[in-house]
Each structure stands twice: as structure tokens, then as C-alpha cells.
Image (cartoon, rainbow, N blue to C red):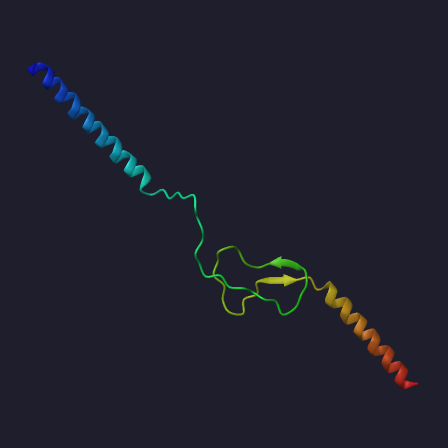
Amino acid sequence: MNLFLSKYKIAFITGMVVVIIVGFAYWLWARNRVSTDDAYVDGHVFIITPRTSGYVSQVHIDDNKFVKKDQPLVSLDSTDYEVALAQAEAQLSDSRSTLAC
């Protein structure tokens, strides 16, 4: 009977040591991991409104980077504006020729 209790105690103590070692190893592995099923980003979001409309031809910034005041964020395609300028100059020239007569 005494032999059975000592084997039981040794098995119990060995099992507890194994559980403690495995638990500590899991804690070391999991302490730097972040996991969630309901993640969201909480940050400062600002709405950027353009002064003019147009197609974006080039983006000058990367995601999640700081920007400074008056730093250009995007370049717009200037084709539409060049066509509008040419039409306005043609109308001006036509109006001047009409007034000259």
C-alpha cells in the first residue's frame, strides 16, 4: 500500500511539473501574439476634400505615413484642364476678332 501511494505521488508530481512546464512554454509563446475575431482600427481619420475634380495620375504618399502641411498628396491629370484652357483661348480669340470688326 505504501509503495502504491509513493508511485501515485511521484506520478502526480511529475504530471504537475509537466503541466507547469507546458503552461509556461505556452505563455512564453502566446504573450506576444495578438488575435481577435472582432478587430477594428481606432485612429485619427480625416476627410480630404478636393478643391478641383479630376483623375489622379500619381500618388505621392504611402499608407500610414505622416504628412506635413502643404505637402502634395496626389497629382491630377492635366489633360482636361489643358483642353478647357485651349477652348477658352479660342473663344477669347473669336470674341476679340468679332469686336475688331
